[in-house]
Length: 159
Image (cartoon, rainbow, N blue to C red):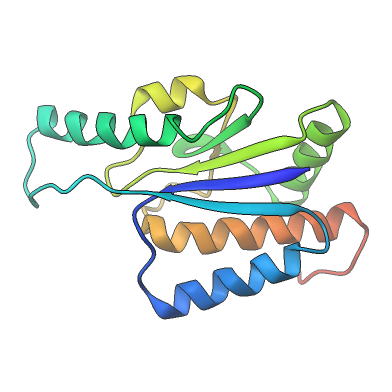
């Protein structure tokens, strides 16, 4: 299995980079993991609905350019399906069992994901109704992927 995390924007905060690097290192014993960052679209603070749509469309095109036809896409979306850590682990194990060996998680920019990306997604995952910075979301996601592999292997993990 290989896992790709495609996210919008360059990670700048050192503490987040360090956390992500730690989980990438831990995951190396379980799976191959690639982190792909696509540039965010520069936009003023105040945007009209139409301008927001344009920004999301451009970011979405950059995301879609990184996806291959054989990727199973899980988009992070506030309206996606909420899962427990155990359920996410089971879902990943099922994907592997049934021939989906290339999984890509997609994290949108500050405005979220364009409908073209959501329509391409095979599944949508939500970490709750709270709005979290998309850069922090990458760290939370990679920790949950690591936890999923620990659960899959029957190894201890913090509950």
